[in-house]
Image (cartoon, rainbow, N blue to C red; front, top):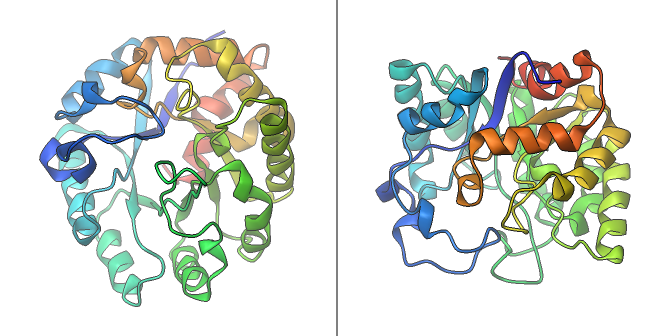
Length: 296
C-alpha cells in the first residue's frame, strides 16, 4: 500500500557559497563523506527528485548558513517558494539564547511560509558529532526564554538531540505544553549496540509521554551511510508503537540522503519499514501529521 498524498516535512535546498560547511574544506560529519553534495542543490533539482511520488507540499529546514545571515536564508527560501511553488513551509534558524531573538523571530515571521524554528542542540562526546558546547544547553534560562518566544508565535520547534539527551530534556518539554516539538531524525539513533538501542528506546518512551512531541522519519540512515528497510524498521516500528501514526511524519532529508539513495528508493524503503498499517495511518505519516503540526 502506497500513500495517496505526501508532505515532505524535512528537506534542504542551497547554493553552495551560502553554506559554510559546504564551501569550506570537508571535515568528519555524522553523515560521513559528503563530496557528492558539496555543490548547488536548487529547488528545481529537488522537484525533479521527488517526481516519482505524489509530493504535494514540502517543508524546508534551515541548513546552517552563517548565523548572522539566518534571516537572509529565510528570505531567499521564501523567494524561491514564491517563484517555483516549493517549499510550502520554512523551519528557520534562531539562536534562542540571543538577547535580540525577538527581533530575529519577527524578521523570520515576515516571510509567509515560516512554520517553525530549529536550533540544533545535539551534543556528543565525539566533538565531530557535537553541535553545541554543552549537553544540557536546554536547561539554561536564556534558552528557555527564547523557546517561550517561539511558542508565543504559534510556531513549531524542531528538536534535534541525541538519545543521551532525551530523558533530561523531558522536564523542559513539559513546561511548554502548547508548543509542538518535532523530534528530528527520530532521535538520532547513533549506537545500534544492545545498550545503545536500549538507551534510545528508553528515551523515546519518556518523550512519548509528552503528547505535544511528534517524531520525524527523516535521516534514519545518517549513521549507517546506506539506505535499507531493515535499518529503518526498528526505528520506525518502535516510534509507531510509542507515539502512534498520528504523531509521526515523513521527511526525506534530501539532499543528504541523496549521498546513498534516490528519492524513490528512500520512500519505498520507508514504506517497507512501516509494514502493515491502515490507509488512515499511512496518510498520517506521509501527510496529515505534518499538515497539522506545521499548519500547511
